[in-house]
Length: 374
Image (tube, rainbow, N blue to C red):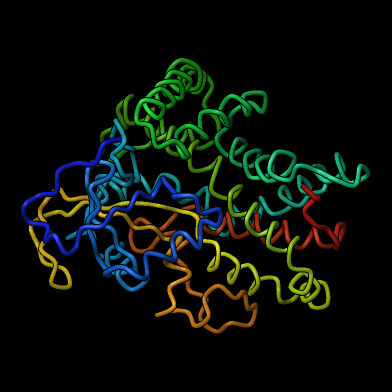
């Protein structure tokens, strides 16, 4: 993708050649994003259509928590080809859509899923523990959270591999054509399979709730909004916890001293989980400048996009002393893993529960593990 011309309101001194999708030969994503801390707190890059980049925890927190000035109308850079129901809505419309999901992710509902997560964790381990090895992401990391989300949405388990492939293209590709094709495939799946079935056979699942919901004072979701809503849930539900599980498990495999702390004192697991999520943020999200404004002396124009690379937030040395060191007893472990403000992830409690159950149950049965040579 060719760089875009720099707009006239952007000072040349704030322009940097940064492409979040190109690690320029780096093999450690966090070493790559740590380089942002050598740059201005806010700078402009001409890549992906041109956009601002926030580099510090403080500014990411402020921008995410100020929807009046920084809209969620586009949550990706470059913008997705369609408006994403819920996450790219602001104000009362966003609140109405969020309310539809709230009962499924309340502490009471999640407590009912905790036993499901525990049973599923053991079933998945049963399939490979006797072999002495597994390909963690494929055999566990992707499957545990996906099966739970598929159940919440009332989708048949046999469709999981198909939807996993779509999720990969939506979440990981930076090619707009690949993303557009993936959205079309999931849109067709929802419109042609899920919606007709759920209208004929409503249940207690999320899709049934969406079909029966009323927003904006009484109107139902339109069919395109339902399709978009489903696409968002599938893409988010099939990726976020799986990615976090991968980073956490790799860290524990490569750091037996930290693993031994949890074996010696399982009561540390909750703090350990928060600290590892602090260290391994995974999201790049975006906001849109709602109207002409000035932020920290930087003039921004309505419609400018701002990248919020939270992978740099958790390792910001201004916020976290010695940020690359994982310290389960660290005092300040505040995280932006699940966002901040009105758009904070509605499934955060479920995600934390899945991760906590995983750590408890995995360490009981597989206390010692490492990355296979090669």
